[in-house]
Image: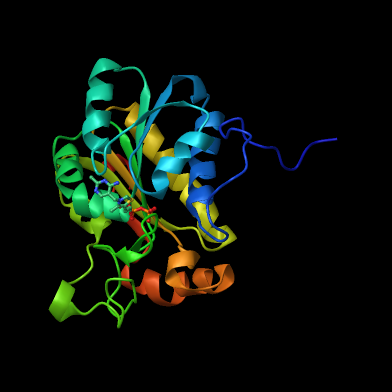
Length: 248
Ligand SMILES: Cc1ncc(C[n+]2csc(CCOP(=O)(O)OP(=O)(O)O)c2C)c(N)n1
């Protein structure tokens, strides 16, 4: 009998410790599934820094390296130089990548570093209890914006796909979501595209996953998925923001 579902070899067989309804697990599974399908599990190095992203090291069945908060792009840049033949990735949250690590990601992309960054945008600092992130939406409540973020007090949320696609070193930037089967299928294609372009060693590749944090959003897992459709996608439109000419 042909199996219809198999546990990917890319994920270690340990229980998840992500919260119910958190989409970190879906993003990780997609990345690991694609690496498995591409036959790369044995020659990949994954860098995950501080935040709920750090838990990924328990699940990813590839070599890995921890990085200080925000510094994964710098660590991955070094790894790429020492290991020109490996597949290299960073797996980063929005507080990590767009706040404390903003400088690192901008310069890695501007340098055209030949690794792939997977960006988990859940609009909040999840691990530390729900503080406002650079990606928190206007009106969204967090522990540091209890009546909702305002433009006057905190400015506008950062759109990392748009920002990074404006840099010449970036060859691919796509924003995907994880809140429906159709979105998950599209997200998997984006992950594959990022790795295929990394193989060409032509520049920096970036996939942003619109993600959920039901625990800190104060929503049920099902309502968090709806919230992505109703509030998050309208501000952060899905799509390919940059790709090589020949891929268009
Ligand atoms: C240098 C440093 N500053 C601050 C912290 C505290 N800290 C741990 S996780 C985190 C926020 C992570 O948020 P995000 O990157 O959005 O990831 P999430 O947990 O939401 O997936 C912060 C500020 C730290 N560990 N190290």
